[in-house]
Image (cartoon, rainbow, N blue to C red; front, side, top):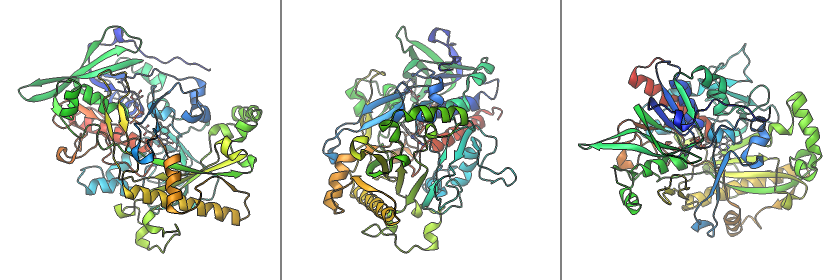
Length: 564
Ligand SMILES: Cc1cc2nc3c(=O)[nH]c(=O)nc-3n(C[C@H](O)[C@H](O)[C@H](O)COP(=O)(O)OP(=O)(O)OC[C@H]3O[C@@H](n4cnc5c(N)ncnc54)[C@H](O)[C@@H]3O)c2cc1C
């Protein structure tokens, strides 16, 4: 079926109050709604602006990915002019449907090495080390590559996020989500895909239509609806979230929906800080500029924005090896479609990225040659070993540049030290906020990206030496710093991994939420999406976001003694 029905309710049918009101039915919102309504005594309302878009096309991996989709599930905005990138504005993609970014992402699934979470623990975040997080990952996974006769203890076998690993390519690390893997390496990627070759999103995994129907007595999903602001009371110095103001996306009167226990904010890294600021929680001077009454002066809101910036270097390769054949030979699509429908295989599974390479730049010399490594450099539990470069070989290219088959090495800076901001453009909740990622504000970020690009150029040389037919299509003029820097300024693009705009940290350190994801100084309000990472992880962000949401649900159940 190209279109399918999904059990949503309209604004007039929303009850006066629910135990929990979830703002944003995206990746994290779907997880939390599922987990909280496991207890039939607990009532939950999910409010999502983008509608339920659940047709067949949204299940086909290639057609549903933002870059090859019709754009109906995406919300695209542009950054402010980036002063370190010759004032270019950068396209930033977010989501606009139930299931959120997990409905449009590239389906890559990796948790990040244990050191990511151990670094949070070492910075004082109680309960967030890898040992604490492992159960939050396994609970939501089904590892389709797992041999049931030889189960690995670090993978779930009956969870709801479905994943598969590719069997192609030459892996140096067998399983990128194995916590005992080395801290760096070349590894097969895992995907959020089911056994029938369909996208497994947070929506299909956590809030499928049949689950919402079967829990209709305690779970309501209202969409398309815009949450305008959180209703925040202030009595005798005690600030508290009481509910939210909502309006149908098609207009009509606004309504207040009360939260008997809590409002849970999961509107994503751009809209969660926007929602807090619209509700009077944020940097006081900025709120006053917009005549918003200040309920809680919290300078960390919308600050510390981080993203994984990427620079593609592109090569010409045989057309048969590249997905550009679908653009250059459109009739191939028919064969590919038949292959997918009959066998569930082929290019529609979007296997453009089979493997990825994770490196620590400190272990590369000035020519990006790998230097001698010790055993300790491999220890994936140690924060000093966190990789800061990812190189993603993608069998795709800009056909205007590659003309033939394209192979792109996407050079990603995994641990940028630059930070930016999300600020209000206006008090209209429908208007996109002003997003300034402030890319390449530090010398560290330039150095890391130069190292990554040089490594990619070496990799290409190595492929050519092995006899593979590969030619430069879009690369820096030379490997001198000036030429690489010019290339970076011209070609940088976002990987759409914005995060850390409501970071988990003490208030005095610019934090917005505490270790239990409660907003500092505001009762009954939690944030639990990709905006709470203390700093951006060196991983693709959907797995960590799901794990944060799992942990949030776990903590809420602990707080209220709900069944789990
Ligand atoms: C194009 C793209 C490709 C990506 N590729 C990958 C990948 O391959 N692997 C990976 O791990 N990560 C990837 N990511 C990142 C990852 O998907 C996200 O980091 C993660 O899904 C974010 O989850 P979230 O819950 O924080 O936000 P989202 O999933 O974006 O959910 C936020 C939700 O809130 C809703 N909302 C916002 N404001 C309001 C409002 N006022 N009222 C009501 N609803 C509102 C939005 O419509 C949205 O549905 C990609 C992201 C994008 C955009």
